[in-house]
Length: 639
Image (cartoon, rainbow, N blue to C red; front, side):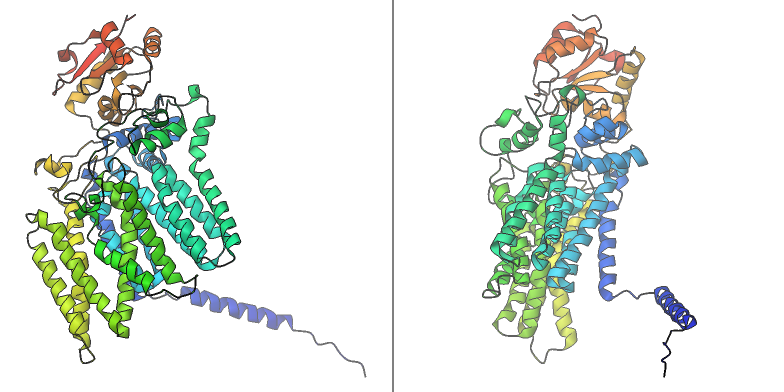
């Protein structure tokens, strides 16, 4: 008997496909409810957005960086090479990577202070979000939320994200690098490790050698905790290190390969070498006693501050309130997080996380303590490590507290130590928010006693109250100092942004004058307007509107106009560009007529030639300069 082959009805197949498609579309149309964790994260991000953006239109921007941003936004050649003026005659004394987002923002949105600061705000928000995801994957949802909240409320983070200084981008990129490393340690895969190297290389474009401080820590954690044979781990590390080196040096190689005549002279160098700029002027000269290492020029007192160094720098009068509130809790979390997981397998993830963030913290503290000096805002790079250790530590202590035993004492001890430490940090500033310290101590006492004395008969409400008091005791002080950035009485210096009643931004500004916009883009003062009008009226085809002695005199003019200026001597005034013969040739070729000299910068051969060969212009012709330290010279006909 013949068999008849069975075949499927095409109509049935099409009906099944149609039903599946309808089910998928119906599923996609259904709104996915947000979890409580998502709502909490959105609330944290909203708080961060308020802290970082409130009245940023009135915020002060760094006079030097904002001048470069205006110039880079006006010309693509200056953008690529980091030209200080639109003609790109001399560069910044830094790699321009951190200013690229700001220059693009100003080019698109216009020359306004808020446009220069907006990328910093976005970078700060991304750092909070990224740290939450990274810490959550390491230590759980509670740890992720607490880490994000701690980073948001770190005072120096808030102060920095409201300005246009490069450290904000550095922090974001290093956080992303730590996330990639954590994934590489957990999975043993090569690709996340290569991404880690690439993120560090991009961070190098933002802050040069400081980005490399995490590399020894990252390498040690990966080699110690990643799965696989030691040789495979070492081989992957070499590939990741090579990736970090190539991405880091990409701009340096571009500049090095470009003919000197086709790019700006590199500020901070006596040999026009990009490697001197990074490894000499911005590297070795900041350590030891050789300010001219590798051909660098000596830095100014402002760029080589003699303060904020030594082992106590992170807890001193000015810097302590910016970053150090959570230091005891973070140190305790690091010590106990590693100790309690002794004897676990080598690839133990929680211990690797404590080693990662603890190594980040320790490495930076060691380097900062041994440098020639640090600006207070440099410590912003410590904030992610402190926040991660705080989140991971509280989550660990809470878990052990619930489990009972002797380890349950760690949570109340951590709360009590943090509250007492707040008295040490806030004590010298009792005139600022005088209610703060008593409230923190009371909350710390309530939280510590409530947690210590709780037992099986303690009600759930009492336990939650003790936990809430403990959390408030830990975060209230940094939150109040962070919120001070919104008060015009505590504006923060444009050169060294700090929160609260410390630093030159507070001591050098009267309370009512703090509301005045400082270093505005595209809004010159009456004095600068008069000078620009005079120069424009007497310009007859010269390439440069003006030559200035150092960036000090050029900054307000560069913020006000996209006209080319010749910045003699760069930031410090000591960079040997242009030489006196080169300056004479520019004048002879009718490329330059006027020069503005100042007594506030040292004399150079170029400035000496101007004084000998050019004619002083009467101040009444262009508006009297208020401080009397500037003199305008007319070099028409000079020999």
